[in-house]
Length: 489
Ligand code: GLU
Image 1 (tube, rainbow, N blue to C red):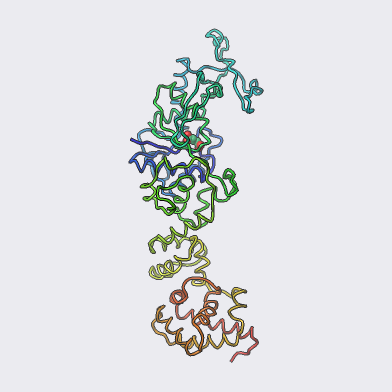
Image 2: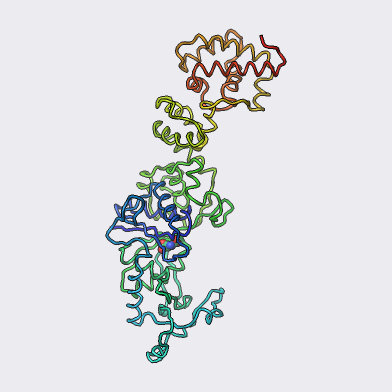
C-alpha cells in the first residue's frame, strides 16, 4: 500500500516548489490507490505561525491537492490513524526514540557548548563536530552531574548508498557526516530525527522531495538502520528555478501559490504547469493535462533530473487553454467574484445574461481577471475613449456622425434584440452607406465600449441592451459634434 506525504514547515506561505513536491506525492498516491498525508513540521515554534499553517492548507485545497490524513483544518477534524500530524505534538515520541538509540549506544550525550565548537569546520566551511564526547566513560558522564547535554547520533564508519528513483544510485562516504545532533538540550528533536521517526511510524513508503534534501538522506538512512526500520523509496526531484535560472526566491511575486489565484489563474492550470516543471508525459509534446489526466499519466520514472525554469508566458498560455476547457456555467461562477470585487453589481443580472457574458469572453481570457477589461462597459458608463483608437477610427467625425445616426435610427426600431438580427441591421446599414461591415462595426464598438478590442461585437451589443446602445451612440454623436466643431441640431 503506497503512503506518501508532504511535510512542510509552516514558516512561510505555500511556495510553488512545495506545491510541486506535494503534487508529485499526491499524484503518485492517487495513481497507486495509496494514501497522501499532510504533516506539519512545526517543531520550530519561533518560526511557526498559524497564519502560515492556514495559508498552506488553503493553498493545497485551492489546488485540489486533498489529503487523506492530516491535522485539523477549518471545520475538518484531524484525519487518519497515525496522528497527531503536527510534529509539535509528537515530541515525546522523538524523545523516546532518541533515548532508545542512546541506550543502545547508537547515540551519545554531548556536553560541549555551542560556543566551544564554533571553530570546528569541515573543508567546505560547515560546522563539523570532532566527536569530543563520543567516547566518554560512564564515570565521566556521571561527573558531568546536571550539566545540559544534547544527544548526538554516532555516525557509523563506511558509506551510505541512496538508491534514488530519480537520481539513480548515489554513494556517500559516512566520514563526510559528523555525529549530528538528534535531540537538543531543551528536548526538542532535530529535523533529521523527527522526519525519520515520522516516516517510520506513519509507514511512509515513498519519500518524494526536493533534491536539496539529497545530502540529508544518508543521515536519514543511517537513522532508519539504527532504529531497525526498513527504508522507504526515495525520489529527489529538482528544484524550481525562476526565469533567470536562479532558485525561485520567496520574495518574487508568484512564489506564493495564492498569488496566482489573486492574478486570475485557475488551479487546474497551476497544477498542470507545476506538474510539467520537471515531469514529461510519455506522449511527446503533450502539455495540456487535467488533474485526472495527470493521475493517469504520472510516473516517477519520467521526472527529469535537471531543474526546470519557470516560464510565465507558458503558464499564461496553459491558463487560457484551461479557461476554454471550462463549461460556461462553471466559468460564470468563477468570474462573478472577480466582477463583484471590482464593484460591478452582478446581482441585478440574470443567470442567463451572466452565462452569455462568460461565453463571449471565454475565448479571449488569458486570465480570469481579464474579464474586468473585457466587460467593464457592460456594468458602468465611461467618459473616455481609447485615444489611439479614436484617432484611427473616428478620424473624420462628420462621416462617423452620419454613420451613427443611420444605425441609431435603424436600431431604435428593432424589437427583438438578438445578435443575429442585429447583424442583419448593421449589414443593411452598410449596404445603404456603401461601406464594408468593419467600417461601421469598429467605430461603433468604440462608441459602445470605449475600446477598440473586446468580445464579439453583436454578442456584446445583445448584452448591453437596446436602451444603453442607443444612449451610448447619442453620447458618441454629441462627443464627436463637440470635437468636430459642429453645432448640434
Ligand atoms: N520540512 C521539510 C521541507 O519542507 C520536509 C523534508 C522532507 O520532505 O523530508 O523541506
